[in-house]
Image (cartoon, rainbow, N blue to C red):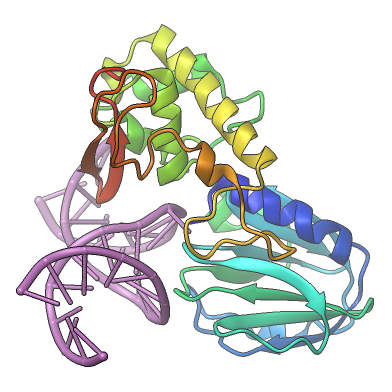
Length: 269
DNA sequence: ATTGACTCCTGATGGC
DNA sequence: TGCCATCAGGAGTCAA
């Protein structure tokens, strides 16, 4: 579920509450996430959280010694609530802070992760090979065109490949392709450079708008204050079983790379 | 080197 | 009402 806008929304929500705070206690209720939570995490008492940054869909919490790397997986969310607030079902990790607040990580499907990195977190094997940030200046038409030129894979799968560009998941790939007028199943190398340029802009605009709405909530996602994200009502094609809002043609649903894709057969080619 | 299938897990939904 | 099959936003890993 959480794609870049949801992770960025989470980052902005927790940052003011956790920055500069000392970790008074760590509560681990379930350590079997995507990878088991390592024993070092249980020993973080006394460390201080310096800042919270984001790389793709990863959240990085820099400590005065080492770093924590979080991933929300498909169903993860974070909230900040007073220490002592009853734990919800599937609330696997809780960091109790010096200000009396607790950072709570909930993840029903346990596809999320919490990793400890003793050195530079950006050099962690999971982060080292990631592609550029879609909202940064390294992601541009020239770059994406170069990535697409030789590839026969569907353009949507290329967009969702985190080694090419980070943060774009199933929902926003569908939305950006709709905005750019490109069919999701089109082979990447069959997309002309001008259309690639349009797609780069569509990805940027879609992500910016979604961040402004606090992300998209389909099921589990909540912002750090417990509110849902409001981009769902702005979605143009994803999950749409009705007609195209522009031309009235019925929206098509296909499966690409085992993921649902939606597009307008009239507006997208 | 790319690619597509498979995998982890719980919960919501829809058909019978 | 209940039971069962299917599907869901991620992404590493493996085999071809």
